[in-house]
Image (cartoon, rainbow, N blue to C red):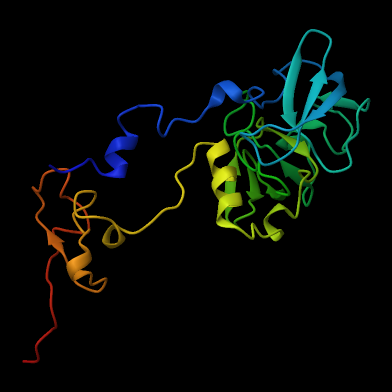
Length: 238
């Protein structure tokens, strides 16, 4: 009897592939949108297993939030959020108020969603240009993306740069690092698996270069590889 593929098992909803969010410190977000600028104080710098970057707890007058910590921030420093605030690391401003060329992080996709883009350690984006009704931002991937004028972002570079430069050395170190976030590790190809685990799995006839066209109407467990290939084989000369 066969088994479900990994991608099928992930969609089942069992705890096997579910992120252990109950062990995380909390949601990382900006302070809520207000009519005037508000200020808060950095209470503590913390580490969260669900985030690669250091986080900071900021106490505002009526609320306490967890957000991404920029480089150079320290406990007890003042953080401001809102239009017209000073342009310094950690402050949150709308993109329309940030000059071109400024390094930013934790950019909102829609105004008020708390931040969705550029949140990994050492990451930063750059305000490329400000147009009539949108702002063009260069992301770490070198891709330029358009954002609304009222989308907010934090100023500065995220702390924790150089994380990817340190090698894991041992596979066990990488295993426990991935296990903290419940990520699938190691990832192996279909031909490396057993026949009961994947349609490509079979140690007796493992050929990575062999074409395996699959019909369009194949069942879900078999529909992997070259789905409904238009043609296979070598092209013959006329």
